[in-house]
Length: 214
Ligand SMILES: Cc1cc2nc3c(=O)[nH]c(=O)nc-3n(C[C@H](O)[C@H](O)[C@H](O)COP(=O)(O)O)c2cc1C
Image (cartoon, rainbow, N blue to C red; front, side, top):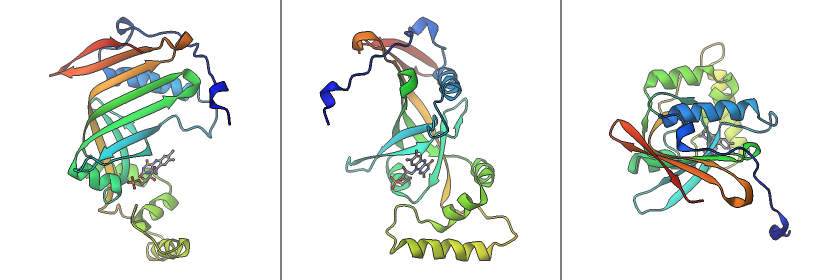
């Protein structure tokens, strides 16, 4: 495979601090809506984001999770609190996120401290998920070793029998995180790689905007 010959030109219009919302969460919502409206198909998850976390020794891990809410305070995602990411966020609540919308030539980077959402928020989202996904969350000790696929399926089937005809309870070990951002970067790919990068940094209750070199 010849990586040197792969070259995409970025053609979208540019961005400048004066055109962006004063609140980066408002700007994120606007870009997210545009990304959903222009989504190339059901196969592309416009709410997928790469989430980086670390342990106290500085080991970094990265995985995709789904963005499940943009509030006035930050962004939400849901997971297993005892997974690798859950343990790392317990040790070091700081996290970084990157979202890429290739068909718009856009990237958003977000950094901040995370905390668990309220149980009410987790309950509400958990019960909105399809029953099959609820059962799988209940059956999975995410990121722990499992002997076989069969063992997982049997555990899930046992839980299905146990809860037949009843709602699936939200497991203690499962729920949401709210990442409260203190830094955002909005990246717009431009012609000849002279890209636009606008960074927001939090200054107490306000945000300051600056342009970064591409
Ligand atoms: C597109 C995509 C979306 C995903 N969304 C989630 C999610 O919202 N929550 C989650 O726990 N795992 C999600 N996963 C699985 C994670 O990437 C990861 O495998 C899992 O959470 C275990 O990660 P950890 O061991 O680092 O904690 C997603 C994977 C992909 C590819």
